[in-house]
Length: 170
Image (cartoon, rainbow, N blue to C red; front, side, top):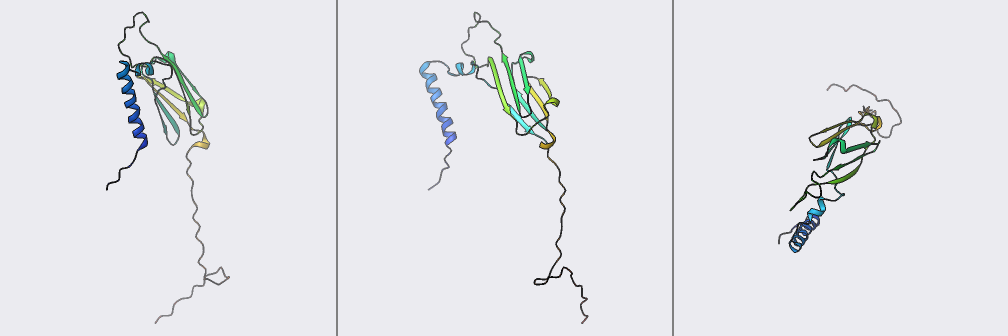
């Protein structure tokens, strides 16, 4: 008899997709249309730890720099902004749209404190990159370890001295 490992989260994801597909078929439309066009969209992030800095990257496709706001505190970053639809309500004749429109807001808690006055930001090709220097307390520190060897003692003696007696030659 073969044992099969149960992966409940994968099964829940499969069930969720099947339910979505069932509603799409029943309603004759794509439910994801509503999901992508509300104000609950949050950008994807990547937070990397280096020896000196925390590096945060965020995907913000379609966002203009003038519609983007970044606030940095010692232990959190707030990214907010808006993606505007290029067509007015009268011109829209969508059959389907999975693009993100509207306002977004994302708060990222940082694992260590940073020097928020020294943060460097770059926004290029829809990717926001923040290089955030860590505070001195949060940086990795190199510690030298002093190795102390205990002197060899004979068991049952109170003397700290080791006697060196030469061996007799045979």
